[in-house]
Length: 139
Image 1 (cartoon, rainbow, N blue to C red):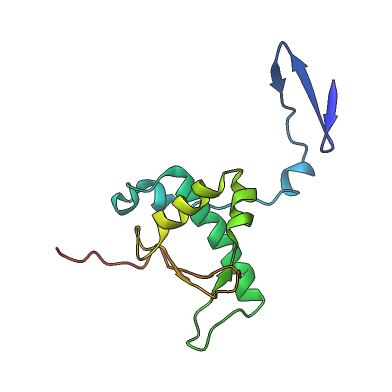
Image 2: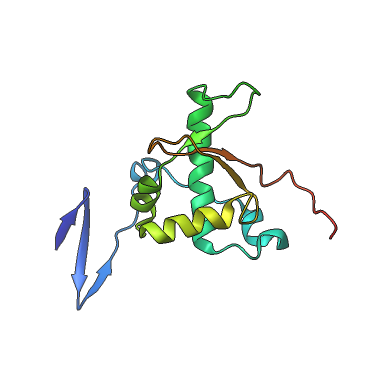
């Protein structure tokens, strides 16, 4: 048996067996919320699963920004989330992190985020758009 992160995992022939949650353990974790609309609404069908997970991470950061009063002069909440933090949080390469941001971006993707460059090697300010408040323009 091997113990990691205060849990015991039994390894058998290369397979990991996970233990059940105790009542205390079931409430000690923080979970990432993925809006069901991102999975079911046809508007988001072109998004990769990784982009949907990144958007969920951005939403999580948005709530922290609101609590810290990161609001611009127009009253819009913004986040600061560097590409290197995205790489670390998603366990992905730099090119993949950039690709996922582009997939979500207003200028190059579906439009769920808008990035404002700050320059001088500082991470962009990111405005996270409301996935539930959209309209489809006619082409």
